[in-house]
Image (cartoon, rainbow, N blue to C red; front, side, top):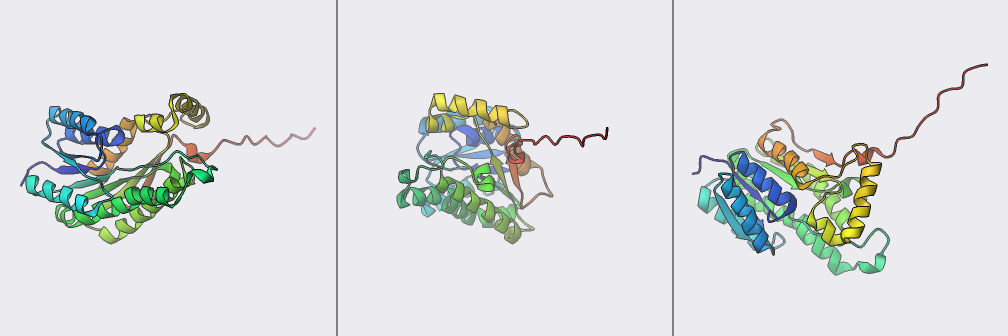
Length: 264
């Protein structure tokens, strides 16, 4: 059995997943790099983790496929005989906007739920006995969409709401052995967002976000990873939390209340 802790990060070829895997590698974890399509980027993510001193395992697999989930965990256990953290980062959306009903159909809904909700559940189910044995933890990468009902599309919003509810349920049922939490980022300045809306729309959205949020900044992948790593490697008394990483967007715009007029 490995003396070093082991973290499995789904969807860790790019963006938040890659930043999380690297951050955990830098903190002494061995890491599983999982991807479904982006092999070139996954190899680069693995190389960065190795350069940081981690032993790594690169595994292709679609979390919406239950057998893939089981195979990923089996390969992890075969290599290290332990698993200490699961980060459910793999996720998809469609950028249909709020009112574009005709852009949505049952197939799109089902595919988004297959990855974002069913995939999360299947990965937890595949990992749970090993996480209990290690007194480990789960971090689900959700979205402010699931907390505030806003986002790239209705099926995405609904899927992240489901993930948040699942997080609460799992935190109760897997305690005291396994801690379960979620992070809920707002806008993230990653390729995923740019690819979804286009560079011009991305720049407009980013400017609007920075002008209207109290902290006046969008998240980077590293910002989100930092919170995930804290939940994995610290936060020993934290479970059942859905932490909003939205620069205060959930607070809404401040309303200025005038002072009471003074008597003449």
